[in-house]
Amino acid sequence: MPANSAPTLTPLPPIPRFDAWAPAVQSAELLRGTLVRGGPGRRLVGWPETPRVRALALSPWLTDQRIAVRMTAAWVWGAAAHPGVPLRFAMSDGRRAPRSPSPEYTLQQFQFEPNDIMMLDAFAVTSQFRTLFDLLRASSNFDRDHRVACRLLLARLPAGRAQMQDRLANGGRPYRALALARLTSCGGPESASW
Image (cartoon, rainbow, N blue to C red; front, side):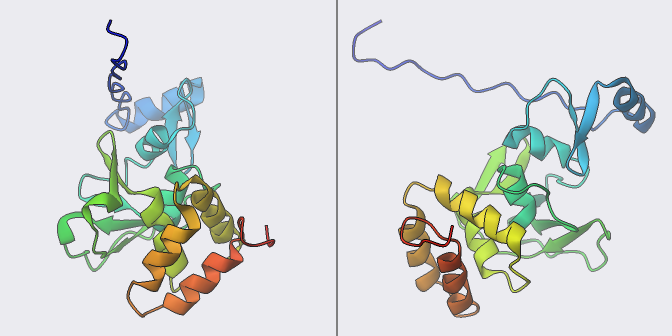
């Protein structure tokens, strides 16, 4: 191997899909201990809690036409203890959300830029940056769980607070001041409110 060449990383194989198993088999494997609860869904006992595994646990709801957003995406990234009730998804490709979704989840319409979506195996989730952006701009209550998720997501961003502050300041007017105030309340190096 030449001295200046870097090792190549091979992509991870997909996580085994159990969501297509018959409900009776899933129930039996849950009782047997092969499957364990993972958020609202299930995961294989041998697989650690990672974003890929959490996305797979959402497979009954996170179809190929949906993207996990807000607290559901924060849970996938490991920044929230639970994915929220109801689960929140956006429609992919600008599709219109159906009028009568299930009480288990909410379908919303968002406009995404190409870097806003990350694929975890076959599942689409908003990027950590976009998840933070959406949580800060949400019109709903910004409770302790949201604040903790935002703090954790903010700590993972390379450009962090400055990049988010710039995006919020240059974004649309609705909820801009609220989002900037929430960003300040999340603490960090420039703030002592941790």
